[in-house]
Image (cartoon, rainbow, N blue to C red; front, side):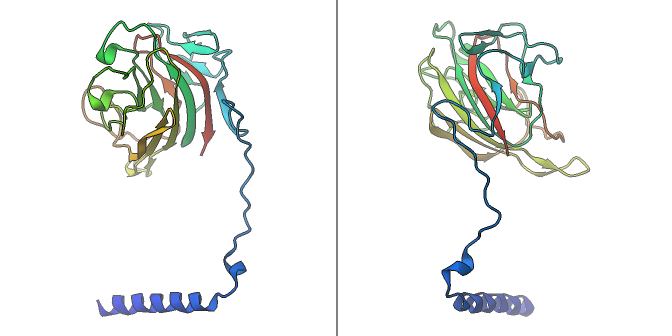
Length: 243
């Protein structure tokens, strides 16, 4: 205990000594490395270093679950779930990313709860940020729009009415596993919906299953995945920046 206290005091004295010696403001300026330049997108355009995953014209960046051509429809600048064709996933794999996308639930309300505009965005193909029409539509809180499915309810309900375009801006830092497949660092998610913070750097507990508790299988990079839950949910303007 005495040795620890002595070392702590030495460290503090050294800090205060160095602090007293710095009289020139230039001594604490950092010039290298210089941050690289990224040009912001104008309006709804992506920034200059983004990978465009969907520009409204085709599904070239996407496949179905088996790697074959994606079965969703494309029209009016959007890709829309075609019931029964299954999920679509990116052909590329990603790790930690900044993801932007816009989504729209059907304007015609034909169901309630989880049956109303249900889809989802899966990071690494594993961790779901829920897509749902949660405008005047009560369901379990950790399953409404912008929830980390069955793990975290959103901080607020930021949904627009059905039929209107909405935005997700997602910052995802993937978990880390050691060589034995043991998770040594949890992944995190921050979600901004329609300009409003709805998930604030939460720690992902594991997978996001419909039934059961989260699990933590070891994994590396993986695809981004959009869910076919049987509802004709549309997406547009999808881009990603690798972090």
